[in-house]
Length: 219
Image 1 (cartoon, rainbow, N blue to C red):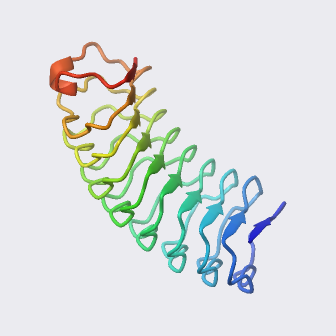
Image 2: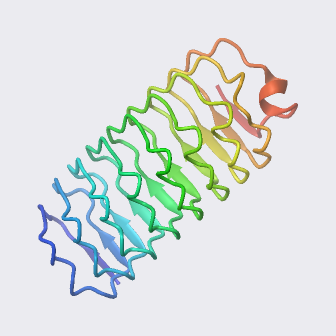
């Protein structure tokens, strides 16, 4: 089932309660400024949810508590500045998460620890100044990571070391000066790396890519 709403403003908590079999819900490009914590509590069959291009500034910690079948979640292009570390902890089947175009400055260390099925993660165009060392430690199935367009200056040496399935990594348009200490050795499936629009002065190829370049390196 699919329902697309043209306009929803601050919907009440029972708005979607009757739709217990709902699998896909589109709420993008509306004027939603806030979401009641229990607005999706009865939509336990939900697989895909689009909340992108609204005015949302805050996401309640238990907003997705009962949406354990969710595989696709898009909350891009909002005004979100903070994510509770437990926000996604029930979404163990989540495969695609879009958070780009928000105002995030930091990420909790545990924010994605329970999303072990995650394949695609978009964090571009936020205000991130750093990445927690172990925030992706359980994301072994992740294939695409986009953190371009942030304010990141340095990367911890092991921040990507668990991403053994990663194929595409986009680090463009940040403030990264060096990748010298970053460990790419475990990323044997890497096909494309984008590091353009950074103030990088030099690269130690052998140290970074262990003797072999990705299929496509964009500088």
